[in-house]
Length: 365
Ligand code: MG
Ligand code: ZN
Image (cartoon, rainbow, N blue to C red; front, side):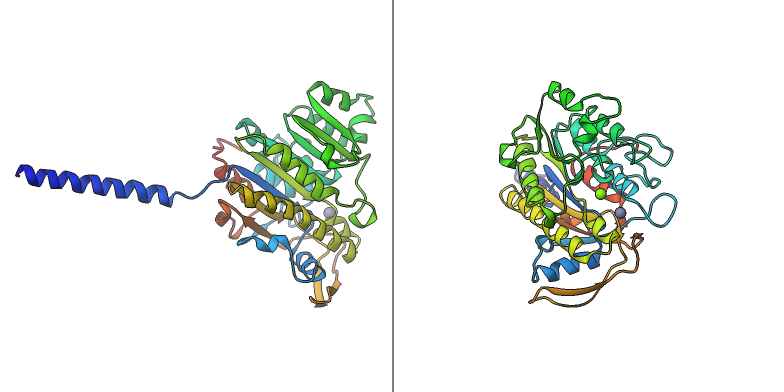
């Protein structure tokens, strides 16, 4: 081979190397730094469509370009409760009804919030029920029964959650063991707020915000914009961490409207949750490294939309049950990694997908 030929060969090798590296990096799927997970408790497809109709044909959640379905059945049985449903999403394991952050053998399972905390991300929970209720509790507590509210409240102190906002101060300060957990939260460095007039007041470091003694009232009975405001405040505090954050926001009372077969109640609660989703979109539009996921733990009420008028915002519905049903629920996703949330998958896959996107390697569940 002549000198010239060797030179050309080398140029070719360099070119191929350069092209391979560029293609590899260009093809690298985008990963989020921040994850905001919305759970509409009891929010099935009919509930979403009634809210879309009532809201004259607009929902923020429909801005998500990727959609899928989540299979909600628990470990043993066909119909999940909110404990097993949220634990499946939080820990990636199917478990028994009533479990809070526990696997089917009643052993604690590490939650995505705890994994995120270990990774140095900031973490938060927001709910319109008590913050100790099954859905938020399953992301932070480990109890055999969802009814052990005082034990669940104690579990909050065993973590380093950065922000939590919801009802339920009674479970922290009016306890059968007379321990004042608000005092302990302050000692741990939390700014503690009891029924703040405005979420603008809320400042971190760490913030524990109680908006009611027990559950907050329904949105149409005096709760006002608590949920969107709390979502905005949580994002404001959590986003100070350049390593990112994980936030779960629950529309807790959609389920209660379903149980009482009260369509106006559940529809108003979904529209309220959708306003909170709007706050997340406002943030994600300015912070492109943010993944938004919206889903439910199960459907409640066996609801159908039988008639309606989108321009007038009117609808007629029928319920077939006062309990949860087994039907799969929708998943909406927006932002880097959102393309992973398509198709039909187990509710536990929500954990697997989020963990993978946050570069959390799960050795065992
Ligand atoms: Mg709930
Ligand atoms: Zn329920």
